Length: 503
Image (cartoon, rainbow, N blue to C red; front, side, top):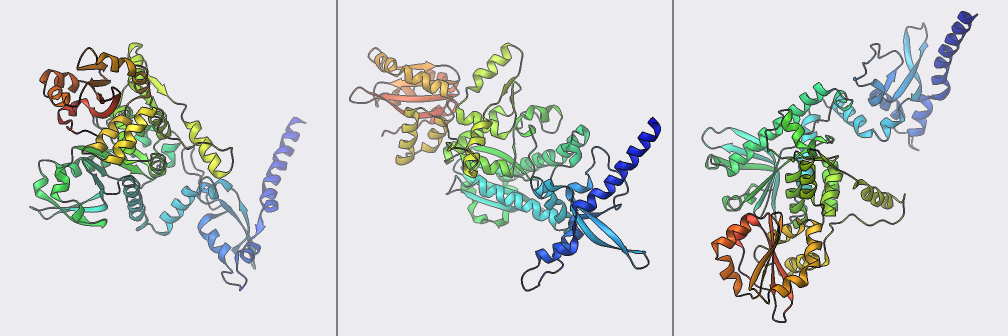
């Protein structure tokens, strides 16, 4: 009896599986009619779509493995055929949308697969060029006066050989080298095949890092005399004169990608341990979608530069783990004292996992879509005092203002708030001494009684040596009415070049 029941159940489900597609599908001729226009043009539009995005029943005879790409992920339509005449020929008759996600949340993968099949030779190059051009456009958006170009061809003067740099932005003393990678991650990597993921990371990230090192050496290294820029795809090669490149003091490396690489781009220690990147290498590995979010959120050149330095430092710290780019950005906007978190983790021989910043972005974008209540746009937190000095620097634009504003924006909120609370005490102490220093090795503040004291103070080698060991140094001075004003900020390593200027 049990055997008969099992056999009946099996045949019932078998018949059901054959019936359901027919019941839920629609005639292909109806779709052709629906997609044609009033004049009767494009009568076979639906049929053409099915040729590229449809799969006939029985067409995929070999079942895919658990890590393979299932056919309906990129061929979401199931095409049912009927036999005509003597039964030797089959023609499409009905269509079933078997994977709706392929036309919605996974539309990018569907289009990627379609274009790579239709244009197998041209598509990879065009895809990579689009990633490069868009990345350079986004990275230069906060630097209106910057020299920026993509598709930069560099020639070795001695041999005549050429190579292509994907992109370069030079804004004042900062250069940003770009080597993009347009290839998407394979499905096996996305589904957890560690061996294939490592192999693809080596192809994407390892190769890009080698190209970035080559680019820097060719334009800024000891071998720069041997190379010259001969042409560009976007921008003008004249932008990158020897004078422009000679002024570069800081270099950042960016590897924009088509797909996000999960936690890899924000936890470079993992890539160091796998041997994909050399120790201490800290390129910004980011998808162009996340890069668009970052550039849209940050509101000025100093903010963007401060973020570049922030993630350059913390993305490779062995005690810090950040889930993704949005969490890294949220950590910067919040003014998180990451040094404090890192020291605490080290004391307990642990890892500081920093998260919780995603919600503000979700709320804001839900509001923009009309799916939620009004929400504030995520913004960089500063104290009113810091906000005023940054605005003043941007308005007056004295020599070195951009760097000073960047340093102010790099200061953790805990330090800025602590200095605000002690501001009156700092001023009172000037009644006893012409100048004094407060703070710690991460952030310090140097307070002077008069403007005339600056040159004398900054000519003292002992004071300069002390300040140079601090990461960030603020400078404040008392005015003629006895009030203490915040005037400047500098990296401790650059205090020797502190500009002698006054408001």
